[in-house]
Each structure stands twice: as C-alpha cells, then as structure tokens.
Length: 152
Length: 195
Picture 1 (cartoon, rainbow over the protein chains, first blue to last red):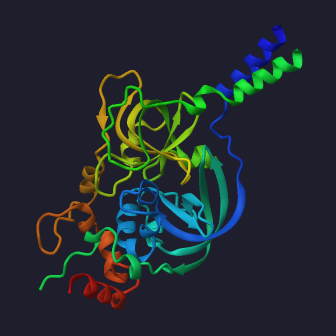
Picture 2 (picture 1 turned 180 degrees about the vertical axis):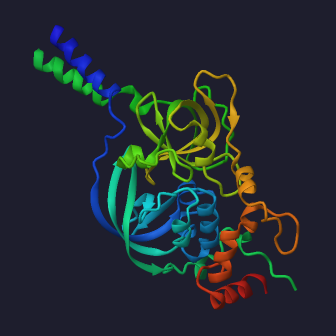
Picture 3 (picture 1 turned 180 degrees about the horizontal axis):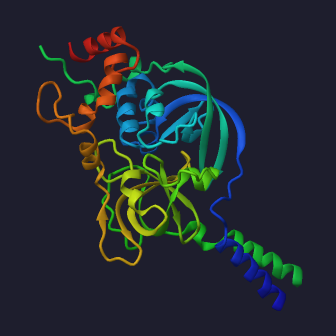
C-alpha cells in the first residue's frame, strides 16, 4: 500500500510539474494554403470550403492584419497553426504572413503537436505557388460585403 | 494484487477526470451562435506560444507574437484565436499585458471531435488572478487606431471600419485585388455580383 501511495505521489507530481517545454519537434515539408484559422474553425462565415481560396481572400487579409492566427491547410486536410515564417516571429498581424494570405506554399520547417493542435515553425518557404484555389467561381465572395458595391 | 494496484493507478491517471472537465460552470460568456462553441471560464498562465511550443524564447512576450493560455486545471495549452470584437480581430493584443502572469478568462471554447478541433478559444473577459475586476477583451481596434492615426478616410469619407482603412490591407488589395488574382478576375466577379 505504501508503494502504491508512493507511485501515486510520483505520478501526481509528474502531472503537476510537466514543463512548458514538453513538445518534441519534427522536421517536415508540407504543401498547403495559408488560411485564416478563426473563420475556418468557427464556421462563423460558412463551411470550410467557402472560407479559403480566392473567395475568402479579402477576409483572410483582414483577419491576418487583425492578428487572428494564420494556419497552413495541408493537402490532406491537416491544419497547422503557423507561429513563425522565415525568421519573422510576428504571427499576430505580421507582414510576412499577410503577404502570403490565401497562397499555396510548400513549407519546410518544424512541426509540433500539443493538446490536439498542430503547430508549424516555417524555416523556409520552399515555393510560393500563389493563389491556386479559385473558389470564387463557386462561392463568389465570402463574406458578401468583402467587395464593396461599385459607385456609379 | 500489487500488479493490479499499479495498473489501477495508471488507469486512473490516464482517465483523469480533468480530461473531460467542464469549464462552463460560472461562465458568463455571451453566445456567438457558433456550431461548436462551449462557454468556458478557467484559470491559466498567459504564455508565449513560440516559447512554450518550440522553445524559441529569446523574444518571448514581445509585441506581435501569439500568446496562449496554459490552463491550470489540466496543463492544456489553449489557443485564443479571437477577442470579443466582431470585426476580424485576434486575442494577442488583449492578452499581452498579462504575458507571464496568471489570469482568469471567460469566453467560448471551440470544440468538435468530428472536425476535429479542440482548445481553440474566443476570449471575452480577462482578469489577473486574485482580482475581482474583469477587463473586456475588446481593445484591439483602439490599439490599431493609435498605431494608424492617419488612416482616417475610406473612399473620401471620414469614417469606416478599421479593415476598410488599414494601410497594409489597402495596399495589398490595390496591388492584387479583392480575390488576390488581379484586376481581370476582380472585374469579372464584380460584374457577376453587382450587374
């Protein structure tokens, strides 16, 4: 029983003292679109297919400039929360991420997973493929007010 | 018996009740009518995400870096994607004054096992641990206005939402259009939408 208590204490202690720096990184190369994560995850503006690509480009600019985290939506559907791009750690409203809004890129960097979220530190944008998801042909513009009505 | 006891401890640990903890009790968060929202209030340490996740700590808590919430109850790292304002604004500016400190937060967790998504958060209120005074997480637009004192007009009008007046957004749209594909693609879409 004493040993049981000892093991319990050790495990409890382990849980409480888990260091913040507990994530093991893995080097990966991944291709995907730089997206606005809030619209993608929350569904606030519609389904996932509508809040990516050219249809959502202006909103992606707004959200990136507004400090909403950007993600990389990989070809297999995995979303990586992007924390840094080529040395630019300004992941809340930064210039580098703004310049890549809606672009499909091939990124080389470090991947981390913690508590159900994937994180990516992009060390190099190997290729910027530009905007390749031309979904404005299907969805128009999302949200509809992103393009102001032209003045006559 | 000894082996059984040890296994029992491991099993109890693995299925710790905090894994399925309900953080909605006591929450006063306002609904956004999002399909996966769950009201949630909890105590957490405000942490620099690059430092906590990747060990990149030289510049931790500096302006422009994303911040996380290391929840006290289960050591889960929660990512606040959004502040309480409606218009395309994140949470880092709201949390920056508290980086490295313990806080209580109230807001909406976005959780959906099927999507899947977990530990994404919309923060509505923050208070330093031990304080009774909640602070609304709605300071982003004021901070933007302070940094962009000359961004006062849109289409010649004196007022307009920040996202219409932001100089970087305006410059990007001027260069590549609302679709990002250039003038020709924009023109065709505008014709389809408005004519």
